[in-house]
Image 1 (cartoon, one colour):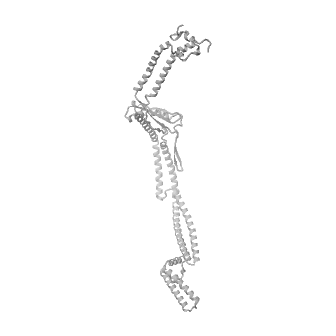
Image 2 (cartoon, helix red, strand yellow):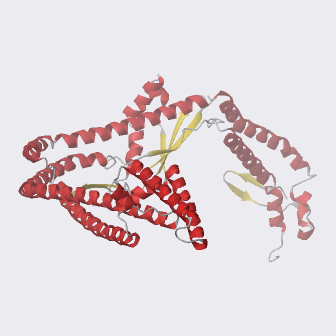
Image 3 (cartoon, rainbow, N blue to C red):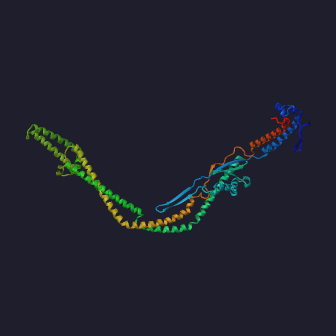
Length: 489
């Protein structure tokens, strides 16, 4: 029989291959399946090699030309982010109320997407043109930015291309500056439009507040009373003076009683105690006191041994009287007191009694200080009480006027707050946007993509080889199928 013949799109007649009919199906080797060793298959080999060569040339020639001739293009990227939180501002007016301003989050509304708005703004002609002008290039040369929004986030990724890494980065940086400048300009324009509508009403309120303030200032100049709070402080100060005066009176009474008790115990007045201490500080007077003590001891010793008229007793008594006279004369010279006054002084030897005399002098000095302070505080209290009585009606009038002024000021402040609260809410229409990633400096070109081109060429070459391989083994497979007996597995 003849070989398999196929013309046109379908096979017309099939005939069994002589060699395969006598070969059991399970004894066919891999070499026989692929037609190895058959003269007819070796004749087909040059044709397949030519097809492989032509296919490889058709695949790799355009890829090689593209990789050699295509200009290099670098991409620089940056990332912008829109914070998701809002902002609030409040102006408090004491005892009146407050003016508040609140900016909702940029993502609180489902009707408007701020990221989509900024995406359109990044691709606007005036922003791209401003970036190109800053770089000294034309709009058609700089190209359009590629803007990508990251789902479920406030991120905006921006990509610009350039012939060099530095050019790509500079274009991205120029686009960023132009974008932020334009956003700031839009915000300031919105604020100026909002502010212009409230200027007339604010001027009227300003005049009312100025008139009320002038009336209050005239009353303040007349009375010297600045505010009702000042009058309250004066009343509080007077109360503090009364409390202080009461405390000083109690302490003065206590100190006076202590001085009187100590004076009674010592049997000497505070003045005499001070003079005694002054005498004790004189060395000559102290020496005379010591001499008196010696003569007193000698007189006592002589009196115990002899009679009252014995010469030694008489001599000792005379020496004692002479020493006392000298001590009295020294005391009169130091103190300037008379003989009777000096006789009333405490002429005892210094010791524990001298400490008590010093304590008496200190207590008297403290009593006099307290008495002087008490008198001073009492005079201040009288003056403050008289001043409060004089200022009482003016304080009531000033309080009424200040209440009227507070109302006028509240109206004026509310008008200002309505016009100025928008200044605190500059991100209401154009939300805050921040630079998350600076424009990058690419380290490799993005176009042409050599790896992708080589991978595509390799995949196409493998597909070509696989297709030709299938075409090569089709005859042995078909012959094996036809040689199989009917009903055989």
